[in-house]
Each structure stands twice: as C-alpha cells, then as structure tokens.
Length: 294
Figure 1: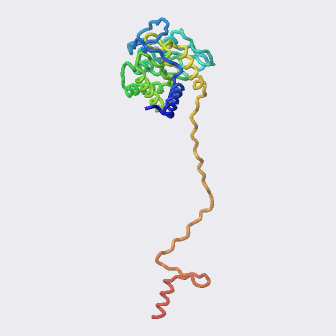
Figure 2: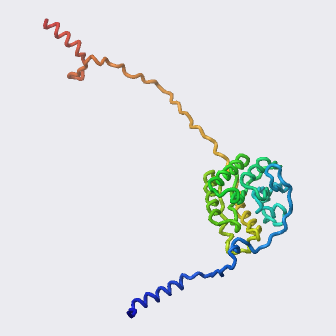
C-alpha cells in the first residue's frame, strides 16, 4: 500500500525534531567498563603523618599564627584537605586565615572524636566542615550516615556557634546514586540543625576524568580551595549578631480619687418611681395601706 503524503510529512517532521534534540557532545563508547571508575589526573606524593591513637587514622592539625586583622576559618575534613594541610596547595590570600584539621580515611564519627579531643590556641571565627565521604565505605544506609553526621554537627556546635557545611566532591570509586542519596541526607540534617549547606557537586562534572586521580578521588584541590574561600568569605566577615536585650514593659500606676461603688440594694425590696421622680419603698407603702384597711 503506497504511503500517503501526510505520512511522509510526519516522518520528515520526526527527523527534524530528532536533529534538534541530538546531544551536542557525543561520548565515545568505552572498551573497558572499569574506565568509568578511574580518573586520568595525577596527585602529588602523599606525605606520611602520625597515626592518631584515638581513631587509628593519620591525623594532622595546622593552625596559622593569630592575626588581629584577619578572620580565622578552621577547615575540617578527610583526605580532600591533605594537600592544604601539607601546604602544597595554598588558600587564596585576603582577609581570612585558614587552619586545617584533616583525618584521611576517617568517617564522620572519627572526625568527631578527633575534634572533641583537639586543643586550639584560639577559637575560630568560623568552622568550615567538608562533608565526609568515607561513610560510603562504612555504611550504605543514608539514615545511619545521617545520624553520624548529625552527631558531628552537634559536637562542633557545642564548641563553636558559627558553622558552614560544604558538600563533598563526587567520587568515581563509588556509585553515584548512593552518593546523591547521602548528599541529600546530609543536606536535610544540616537544615534541621540550622546550619548552612553549600552544594558544590556541579563544579565537578564526572565526565571530565582529569579532575580525578587513578583511585577515583578528586585531585582538583585548587578548585576546592577556591570554592571554600568563596563561600566562606561572606559568613566569616559578617559581624556577629548580638542577641536582643529583653525589654520589660513599664507598669503604669494611676492615682486619683477612689470612687466607692453605690450601695447594693436588697433584691427582695422593690423600688417604684412615681410622679416627680420620687422613689418610695413598695414594702413600706403596702404595709401602711394594709394597716389602714384593717
């Protein structure tokens, strides 16, 4: 059966629509399925740190010299902060000075233990917590990871009141779906506790494998430093709000002549008003009338 003219028009319209919706970037087919888990970037040589007796992980705390004209920001996180703690990657200069507390391989609970047992020479003006990613290996349950994350936030808030959470960069050595679920759980916990949560996953496109090292962990520390500096500048330099002083309403006392209330009348005695607005007692009049009749 020959095709009608309307059918040919419909097919042509479908082809034009398919050309418009075609992706601008076409990904080449992968020959090895494991290529999606491997980055193509390179990382600096890792320096060995002292192992903490509290958590069994390497741990390092660096605090800059106190500067009166700069705000002190403390960065807390896992191995993503290793190069910053070693001084290989420098934080941008400005009105902020940065200290680093890094626990490579540590989960949220490990970071909480290290933080509670740390001693700082002076308190930070702001704490920047990099959301932990090692919970992806310890548990696949987002709710359990969220509970550990909530305890970490609560422990920080017991020592310092100003806290900002920065989202963790995506990892290629783990499935993206559990990472997104854990990211949403961390965001929910932070909002519940009144802590600002800054998402940064969009700045690390997973299609650009040069942003990750061979182990699948992001190695673009310079980008991470710039993001932390950018998002920490405004809250760190903002003045601390003082709580409002409670005001007591003044108590107004009125003085003047005390007006005594009118005497209460006996409800069992009737009062009648006659001509001339004269008031006379009904019981008295009735009794006198009865006595006169008798």
